Structure formats: structure tokens, C-alpha cells
Length: 439
Ligand SMILES: Cc1cc2nc3c(=O)[nH]c(=O)nc-3n(C[C@H](O)[C@H](O)[C@H](O)COP(=O)(O)OP(=O)(O)OC[C@H]3O[C@@H](n4cnc5c(N)ncnc54)[C@H](O)[C@@H]3O)c2cc1C
Image 1 (tube, helix red, strand yellow):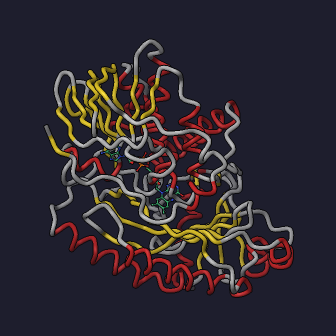
Image 2 (tube, protein in one colour):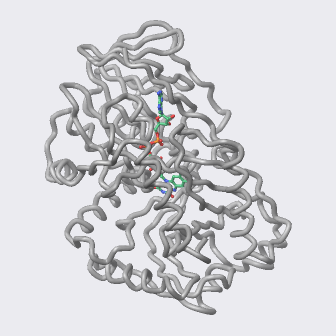
Image 3 (cartoon, helix red, strand yellow):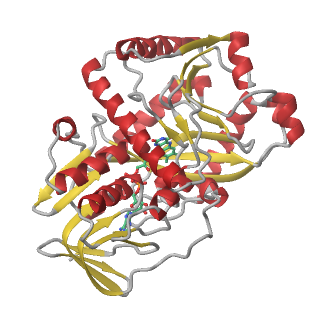
């Protein structure tokens, strides 16, 4: 039995989960006692939810267990910035345009599937087709904006370039020199969306929350151990993101990187009317990869995400949260000096599960053992479509999309620790140093 020692933790004050209208509406069912299922899926983030939903559609008579160490919405899927990005999320205009087009189509597919679920089940997650700004503060980073417009031209997708007064009127801050706006990105509360998707799962899926897997025996059947319980299942899917390493399946492929987010209290109606007159909620990512993500939310809060930290324990400590909070305050004040006194109500950390070549783990390890991981910071759309197509694969449904995904997801080798940790820390420090005012 493989012992699972590093387990997910809460890592701060989970702003989206705390403010989700779905939190507190249902109680968690813990895994206790011995159970037998046809399929066990470990990890109920967007990836695992998607595998479960699609597999249940294919196999309505099978018994599927979906388990998570935390409540749905408390894991990384509920801690992110809440962008469902339709476009290939890179700043590299030299990326293969054909590859980009396929990824664009898959992202659109994921957005449509989530949108359909949201409408059918009336999921209250502040879903908005608000678009996205990719913005630069530093003159040095304007070239990234231009590079991105080349990618957009190759994709033949609409966009708008904004500068100066026009940009200020859209954002309510004059911090940015230039931005490119793309209209089809979705903004939402990610914890609420994950909770809603979980509640909408077909009835042959049983969800167990607050149920960490503490041991795993791969075989026929597979056996997962819990505190006071066990599940035996013929088919096993691991959708545990950075924690996938713990199960010993894909060593030397992942680089788990913590990043941090804060959410302010809602500003007063007066503040909103005065400083953001007629300004719709918006979301912005930085032209520099180490820069700050910012949102103005529908409930008049400001969201800030930046700072990175490589932490092999897969948990974040109080000192790291404190450092991130300080940086968030600095970034906030630089962009919104007029909102002086608007405090952060929540600050938290979460893990980006990176791979060196930005390709994900999408694999069948042995008969009836599947894994997906390494969403590279865009897991809402990517986890949703990879999860869907992993279910297609398990159910034996072949398609050109599945072939493309299988061929294009081969993450390259990452050296073991301590080399990995040293390399990652040097790279993160270098990128942060170069980002300057984008942070
Ligand atoms: C601050 C931040 C901002 C981000 N912003 C965005 C964004 O705007 N848009 C976007 O698309 N992506 C964003 N990301 C990335 C995105 O959140 C991830 O790519 C996504 O959550 C990956 O989904 P997943 O289902 O693969 O993994 P996860 O969401 O990590 O789900 C894995 C689940 O496995 C569970 N688990 C792990 N080990 C065990 C165990 N032993 N037993 C039981 N359960 C276990 C965990 O509790 C977890 O819930 C952001 C990430 C962070 C941290």
C-alpha cells in the first residue's frame, strides 16, 4: 500500500468559497466503512468533476465515486482568479498557429459545456462574459501586447487595443499604458461554479468530501484507504493536480508553484459611483508572466493575484501568506490610490501545477488506471475539456480531439529535488525581478 503523506490543506482565507452563495447549503458526506464502486475518481476540482460528469453520461448504470480531501470549492479550483480563458494563454506569437486553433476550439467547447450546466441547473456563480484585458504598465512590456495581437490575428479572433484615456475609462485606473481586450473570456466565482457543477452531477455519482485518500494499492481492483474507510474499484482516475506526485505515478513531470490572491471588502456604493462610474466588472492579466492579475467584481470588490513560491511541502505557511498580503497591498495601492482604506478581507494561496513544456499529464498508466494533471494555470477550461476527453477515452469513444489531446500532452522531464527546487526558485526570482511595475 502506497502511503499518501502530503495532503491538501486550506492555505489561508478562501475568499471565493466564503462568499459563494452555495457555501453552507449542504453538508459533506465523509467516506467511512468499506465500499465497492465501478469507478473511483480522486480529486473533485474542475478536472475530476468533468471526468465524473461525462463518464456518468456514458455509463448511467455504473457506480462512480468522486472523493476529495476538502469540500468542493476549497481546492485550487475554487481558489483561482475566476477566468475561463478561451484563447491559448501564452504570450508567444511564435506558437504553432494550428495548435493554437485546436486549443482555442477545445477551450470554447469547455466554456459552452460549463455554460450549459450553469443554465440548466441555475448555478449562481456570478458568471459574466466580461472579456479579458492583457495589459502593460511598463514600456518594456508593450512588445508582449504586440506579440499577443499577432497570435490573435493568426486565430482570426476579435480584439480591441486600448491606450490612455480610453483604457482609463474602461478600467477606472490610469495605471496601465496599453491593453488588448478580447471579448469571449468568462469571469465568475470559481468556488461557486465548482460547487454548482458538483451538485449537478448525475445520480450515479456519489460525492465524498473531507475524505483524504491516505493510502493506495494499485491492482485489480484498486484499493484506496481513508481514515476509517476503504474504496475498492475496478477503474481508478487520479485528478489530484500537484498532489498526483504523492501517488508515485508521474514523478519528474510536475513543478507545483504556489501563487497568492486577495479579495477586498466590497467598496461602498458611493466609492463605486464616484471612482467607477458606468464601469462594468472587468478582469485583467498582465503582459508579463510574473505580473499581477486584477479584477473588479460584480459585488464591487477588487481581486489581486501575484507572488510565487516553490514549496515542496505542498502547503503554504503563515509567513508566506503575510509576504503575499504585503505585496498585494502595494500592488493595490499603486493601481487604486483613490481606494485608500479599502482592506483585504481574504488572502489565500493555491498551487499552479506547472510542467516545463506547458503540456499536461493525460495518461493511462496501466489497464484501468488513468491520470490527468499539470493544468499550467488555466485549469478551468483545460481541466474541463481534458476531463471530458479522459472520460471519452475510458468509455472507448475515439475522436480527432482525443487523438490531438493524447499526442500533444507529453510533459517533459523535470529533475528531482533538490535540483528542481533550486531551479524553480531561481527562475521565479528572475521572472519576478524582470516584471517590475507589472507586479
Ligand atoms: C491563485 C490562482 C489563480 C488562478 N487563476 C486561474 C484562472 O483565472 N483561470 C484558470 O483557468 N486557472 C487558474 N488557476 C489554475 C487553476 O485553479 C487550476 O489549473 C485548476 O484548479 C486545476 O484543476 P484540477 O481539477 O486539475 O486540480 P485541483 O483544482 O487542484 O483539484 C484537485 C483536487 O484533488 C484533491 N486531492 C489532492 N490530493 C488528494 C487526496 N490524497 N485525497 C483526496 N483528494 C485529494 C484536492 O483537494 C483538490 O480539490 C489559478 C490558480 C491559482 C492558485
